[in-house]
Length: 112
Image (cartoon, rainbow, N blue to C red; front, side, top):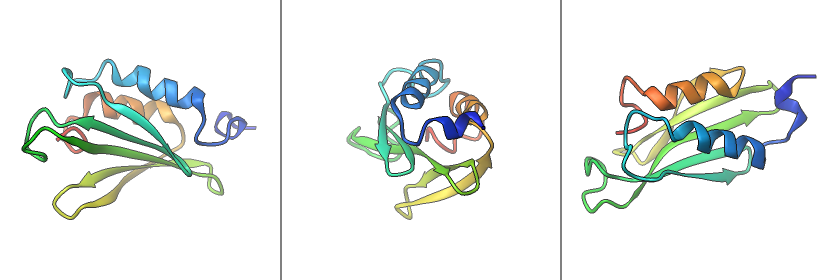
């Protein structure tokens, strides 16, 4: 049985893993992101310190992680703030590569 299927999503164990991984991120280091639970995964929000998206520094959506139970993989989304819509970025077999990408975000796709 795959590790992902041992704990239905969302669950507190993976929520804590995501929170711990975000501590070492390269962008938005001076604010505290939040990891929320949604029906099939997690949503990451953060105060907007760049003011690029939210001029008043309000809370913005950073990423959404959805576990697709039938296919047993994760789909990562970023927020297109101009269209006010989530956009699928890529699919992953496990959380670690997603967390590595969210820490680095070389394209500034998530931490805008």
